[in-house]
Amino acid sequence: MHLEFEKWHGCNNDFVVAWIQRTDKDLIIPSLQRQAARICSRTGSGIAADGLLILVTRDRRELYPEELIVINSDGSLAKNCGNGLRCAARSVLRKLQAAGTAPGDMPPAFELQIQGRVFWCKVFDQKVFGAKGFIGVGMGEAEVEAIGAGHRLRAALELALMSPRADQLAFYRVVIGNPHLVLLGMPPDAMRLAAFAEAIQNLDGWDGINVHFAEESATVKNVSVQVDQSWTVLPWERGVGLTQACGSGAVAVAAAVAAQDAMGESEGWTMIRMPGGDLFIQIAEENHTLAGPAELAFTGALEI
Image (tube, rainbow, N blue to C red; front, side):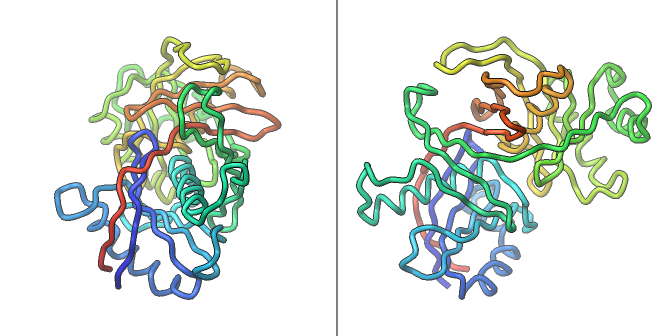
């Protein structure tokens, strides 16, 4: 079967994006899950991506998708993906533009659904962040659990981390549709992060978990929005591994920071500096807004 695709990336967290019809969903999605590792391969045999984003419409004439399906590079399905949502939103805007929608008629905001959960996407004016193509996504509420010294999982996590500084770190489990483990105060170390993350995937019956090392950094003041603080973060995503960026992970870190500092809501933004670029999170009315770029790399077609 011939499938046209777009290659997008948000802070170098890259995705293969394709549009399909509802009637083809039950055939195409299982096929893509089986082939995800090959399609996403970076060894020369694939397109090179961290995952697949499938936008499902009722029919060929429909310009807005009724569903977004996120497939990790190992074929598993994700419940949330901040960078993927922004890339999917930009693909929707590209489709509207190709259909002849006038600039003044482009929607200022619209919704995307992942497994029945609604995420609102907003297009930011260039003067807000000083860059074109910034999309904001309402990621909803975050469930934050501190894993302190007396927590039943603390000893197991410290043992798996194998760091002399483990007892000085703040561990947080954060759920934003998908689960994350955030280690505040842990310097980015790719080898240690990968080993630690792989060792705890089934801890306490977890069915996989995203893991992030985060260390506070100097605030960069090159944007027009108010940035309260900045953190340098190294992300590891379940079903993928080490990545250049993780949108929901950036939200998880910001939520953990807010819980640690008892910050609560703020008009300012938390800057999350990942290897692939900077993301911004704002917390208001218990909703976490994730803002960042999404860029089209190229288009193509593949046989599945």
